[in-house]
Image (cartoon, rainbow, N blue to C red; front, side, top):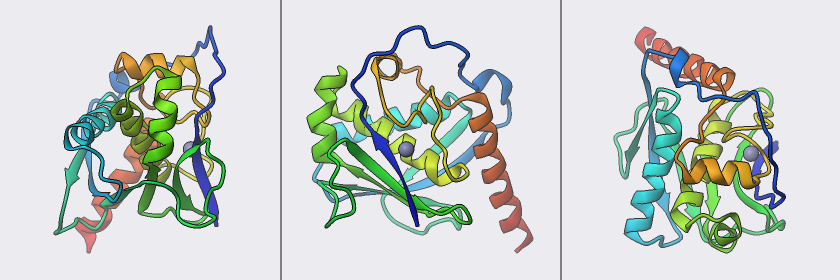
Length: 198
Ligand SMILES: [Zn+2]
């Protein structure tokens, strides 16, 4: 099993080009239901702001995140579990802020965000806890929806964050690249049509 991870890189990049939000080219709107399980005791207002930040990342690519705190769940729903810290030896690297398990053949349906690490690195990136938490959740949800090896050099799916990502997050501009958004939308469309046939 491979683990995709979010790593908070603190190096500063400038002059990144060739990336633009995908919203302008994707008119049809799709939705994904997300069950949020907070086991870290995130303050209620910070949790709401984090959900808003993640929702915005997807909305910029014309995809709706619909947060739920309990069932019933749709067959294609995903789960984000916020944990204070990873359990056991899953990740001893403190730069890893979240995980989404999966293999080349199959995606998982649950992703994790590690709140203590997010709290620790948020200030270094010039973000507040909820901003970083929200973007980590969006990144990990991206892994669940994209093919294996879903990191890119720019946008929310960059594996190691830098000043460019942090600035775009602060401005509420960070989202998926056009090709990534198309893959997510294909995935969601396939799920919807599969359910319709069942
Ligand atoms: Zn990642």
